Image (cartoon, rainbow, N blue to C red; front, side, top):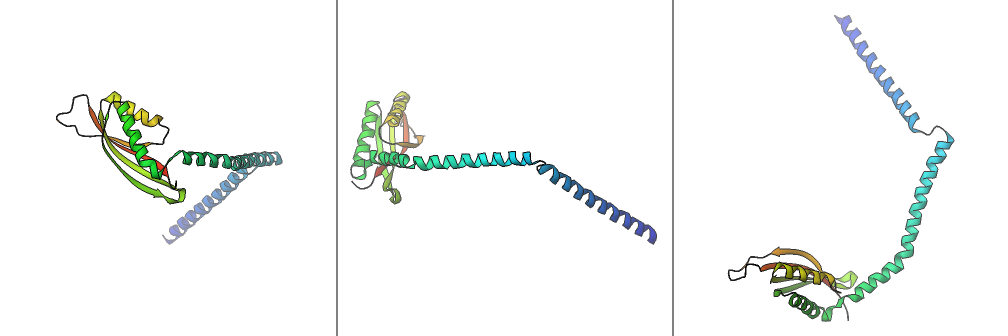
Length: 184
């Protein structure tokens, strides 16, 4: 019985050694397949890598060359914003005029400001309630979109309707953001 165990142990040990040797042989074969065999393959691989790096450098140089134009565009955009001193009344009157032009009522209006000091700007969050028919509401939103000023509509929420409200009238709570430049 003791002899059977020793033979069995040797058979298991021999099998494990055979598996390890097979694994090492397969690893060497796999490594040999992945390595370039000829100098031409090596050259082709390095040429492709060179082309990729050259294209990356070209893109970086193009970006560097375009930075002054991009900065000029950003400065122009910031100059097109309302100054903080006159911005609130300008936005309020523009929203009112757009609402009136499209036949809807601007019922509620409140605003909160957040200073963006590192950009020299103020972000103004506006909450307004407007009511009118669907077509007029779409016209109002298109008017905001086509405005020369920047208005970012964050959300539209259908508000509860009053009992004395006409059946084709919808009431919408509008959350809009705009920006003012600080200073003059």
